[in-house]
Image 1: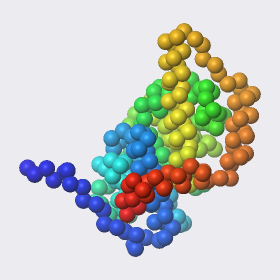
Image 2: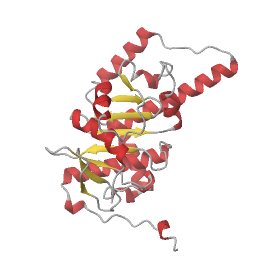
Image 3: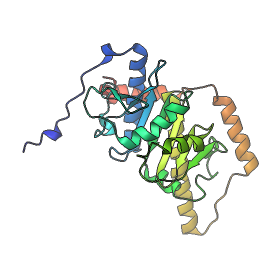
Image 4: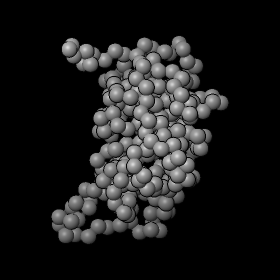
Length: 265
């Protein structure tokens, strides 16, 4: 049998088949996937990022099933509705059922959120297994202090009934720890979701390092006092509450256009 699976057939460019607004979101979401691959926030093809398509319909974009994050392009992203119907799939890959369940829950209930990113990183999964969850140990964590939700594990997310419970647990927050599973960070734009995910992943990584050092050395952890943690969180929220694109995003886009320009095709 020929090893034709080694040859990835690129999805044909669909830029002329969608609105300029949808194409912009597609390029940003494809960039998000490539950045996640560069930073190691991947689990083969097992996790998913999504973005709402501009317009009155509840349509959103998901990664094609069976493609690595580093292979995603703007045209290969699959457009679906909240009932799971595939509306556009240029590469013919379809989508993962669990990814649809998790992401459709957000896009159905929180129209203020444009993008949702779910990861199974080692650090994120490890912290999701701790009863205490994410702890106030680092400055990265403080942007989430008092603003981070938790959802208990119910098995593989293929039961559509779980959507209501995910939304209930998320509440008014934009970021959630899926216990014994991983992380999900959302944003009012793709760049905001990226910034949230980067900060939460850094929080988990530094927490694990601190806990390991504490155990190995016998030295206690130094927690940020509650009043300082909450005041810092409030200050970050007030400063960035209206900003949906951080200054870090253009630097990341420049990097991708220089190193992997095919993401935007």
